[in-house]
Length: 308
Image 1 (spheres, rainbow, N blue to C red):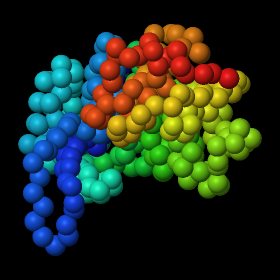
Image 2 (cartoon, one colour; image 1 turned 45 degrees about the vertical axis):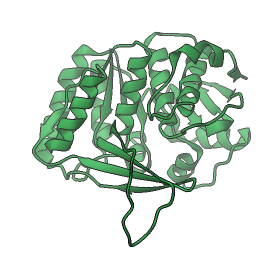
Image 3 (tube, one colour; image 1 turned 30 degrees about the vertical axis):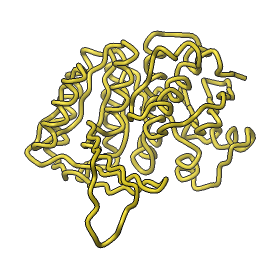
Image 4 (cartoon, rainbow, N blue to C red; image 1 turned 120 degrees about the vertical axis):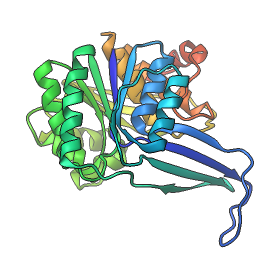
C-alpha cells in the first residue's frame, strides 16, 4: 500500500466565467468543487491505477469534513489527523483563456499538533510499503518538518517520494536522511540552487551534480510537454513525450508522482518506471478533472513515450 500525505489540503473550487468583471457581481452557473491538494491528486491517480492507497494529512472543520466525504465517495481510504481549526478553500477563476487563483493559507498548526501528526504518521507506516509527500507545509510547522518525516520513514525502512519545493525541500536535502525520489521542475530546481537551470542536458547534469542530490536514488526533473530529465543512481535519462491535445494541465505533476510511486512500489524496470510516470502525467492533461486519468488510454500513450 502507498501512503499519500497532504499536509495542507483544500477544497478546490473552480469558477468558469466567460468574462471576469471587477468591482461588480459575477454569476457562475457551473461550479466544480474537488477535494484538493497535491497529495490528494496523487491519491486519486494511484486509486485509478488500481493500486492500494491511503490518504493522510491534517484536516479540520466543515471543510475538512467535506474533503473526507468526497474521498469516501471516490472510495479512497483515508486517515487524517483531525484538528478544530478550519481547513482551506482554493478558488480558481477561469476566464478569457486565463486562470486567476485565490488561495487561502489554511490553518496555523501548533507544535503539539505537529507532534500528534508525526505520531500518527509513524503508526501508519506499519501498513504501507512506500510514501508520497506532496505540497506545502501548513503555517506553524518548522521548515524541517518533512525532514523529520523522512527520518521516521528511514528508521522504518520505508522509501519516500518527496514532491515539494523551496525551504522545506532544501531542509530535507541538507540532512543525511534523503528521500528515495524527488520531482522538481526546472523552475523549482533553479530556485533551490540559486542558479539558472535550463533544458539543455549539460545544464541539467551540472545542476544534479550538486552535493545535495547525492544518495537520492531517483531525481525526476519534469519539463511539461518537453518530458523530463531523470537521474537514477549514476545513469541519466532523457524522456520525450508525443504531442497531445491538452485539456487541463493542472495536477499533471501530481499524476507523474502517482505513476512513479506505483511503478516503484511494483518494483518495475527503470524503463517501465519512467514511461509509467510520464504516461500518467500526460493522461491527466487530457482530462478536465484535476488528478484524473483514463486508464483505457494508458497502453496507447505508454508506447509513445521515448527513453534515451
